[in-house]
Amino acid sequence: MELRLLRYFVAVAEERHFGRAAARLHMTQPPLSRAIRQLENDLGVVLLLRSAAGVEPTAAGATLYAEARTLLDQADRARARVTAAAGPATLTVGTLADGAGEAGTRLAAAFRRRHPEVSIRFREADFTDPTTGLRAGLADVALTRSPFDETGLSVRVLRSDPVGLVLRTGDPLADRASLRLADVADRPWFQLPEGTDPLWREYWNGAAPVGERPAGPVVRTVGECLQAVLWNGSAGIAPLGHTLPDGLTWVPLADMPPSPLVVAWVTARENPLIRSFARIAVEGHRRTHLQVRTSVRRATPRK
Image 1: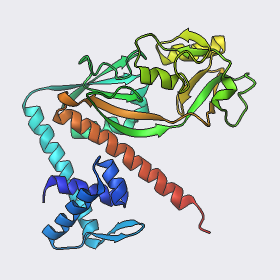
Image 2: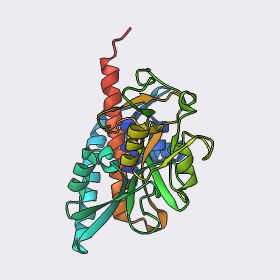
Image 3: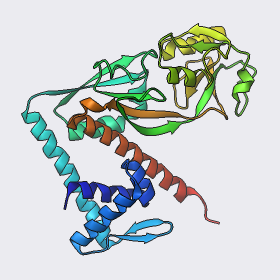
């Protein structure tokens, strides 16, 4: 059994759906279906029961899933030992503000289990470079937010978060259940420095071309954004989950596209350690999403 086929099978077994598993593996559905058929033919058993709603593992499939997880973990540990034998390894992770914290403590724990010998360094960048120094070689992999120019980069979405308006708690709009961008069209909007990635600047300018909103102060960090709102009443937006200081509140924006939290790296400099970091990050968030979805489904009363 090839490890590649086992990874495919684990994705399908966890997603319970070929389409979702294919998206998770960044491939199309037909070759994934053929790969699972090949695995079933190699083993001479039916692993998955297929239906219009998705798939369910058979008894043989459930057994293979448990064994496959063990085999894949062993393969990752073997790879880590081989890497360790080559000498100390260091991975520099670029972040924006609290990007590492947003990725979650599970990522740190999972990575340490797989690669206990690797030293992790963090490099916090400001808004002038949403790729956190990847192209300049200052970071090996980034935990950041898109959109930005992805030329030459590999990017995987971990999750997408709703975006809201950050307001002073005494603001007349602060008690609203939700807002639209038109509600703050006349307010000064904080600006990002010249030379910042155009896609990034436009998104954080409220999805409007630069210059179409009243210009507020130029900011380079999350802290500067929050202070611009607190002191000047400037319009500022942030993803759900950002920690706000006293005196500020967050109101959802109904017409603002969500903010994707991503892991990214320079494709030409990809190596096994970077691939492992990205895979652990993606799998960890997928598993968390599945657990949350399952909990919600179980908690929802049946009609």
